Image 1 (cartoon, rainbow, N blue to C red):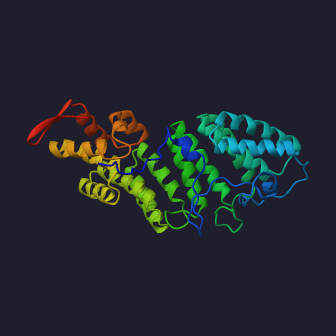
Image 2 (spheres, rainbow, N blue to C red):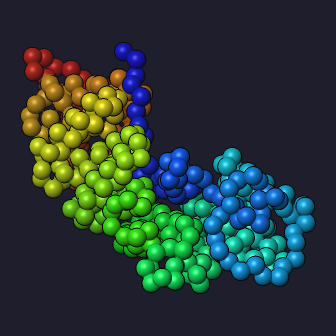
Image 3 (tube, rainbow, N blue to C red):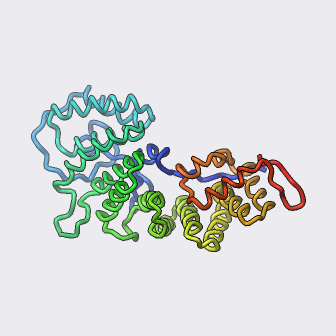
Length: 348
């Protein structure tokens, strides 16, 4: 049988770097994810990308030379090409040049933020946080609206809290990461409804599970799924619903969890994670034939296969399954043979 397409997860800490490459933002007209954007004064120098919305006063500053502008272009290109060490070196040089030229704050913020993202991808989390702190200091002067609402005056301000949250995840600073994600959500208006970035709700939900706050995490996952569906992003909605299913399971609502797992599989038959979760549950219930069936499907009929799920460290630390299911999967994997109903077979 042809393997069915599988949706991969974006889970910290191992994939924090990938997620921190950009915080997906929802464009109201296109509903597409957007990558980093450059300050408007740099557009004619760097790229034709849309401008940042930073509203800073332009200070008197010397103009960069064509060679210096090209160096910044190369830094961003290296970042896009995932040549991270080159990108870090070029950003270091460019930041130093921009400081010497006393360039405007919006330009400095864009360069230092980009360098921080590169450092996250290099797993230099402490150094990345230093950069993000510096940009937050720059933006804090006028990062919030003056109407007393406490909301962000421009989108890049809450984005920095998210980026720092991702870096803190890389350091296993779970509570600090939750606080950063919550600050970003507050700057978007608070709550879990319209106007909140659903990816960040998922990020926060993942960290809340690390803190054992499963009820709060469940609210984030369910709200995230609803927001994704509202923007017609069915793929990411399924990922959020899978997270919700695992959380229901840990809270003891097994019936709701199993219903949601099967619903995810009905919509995406090759969703490896849910097949393995159902296998673990079935094993725990003594339904050996069903456990083997779900495991075999995950191994043989999905594009990613089951190899990653043989590693309980991946399942618990990277995929972030809750303890109850991890224990059941461990018991399942601990058997060299599965005694199925009506016969026996070896785990593949």
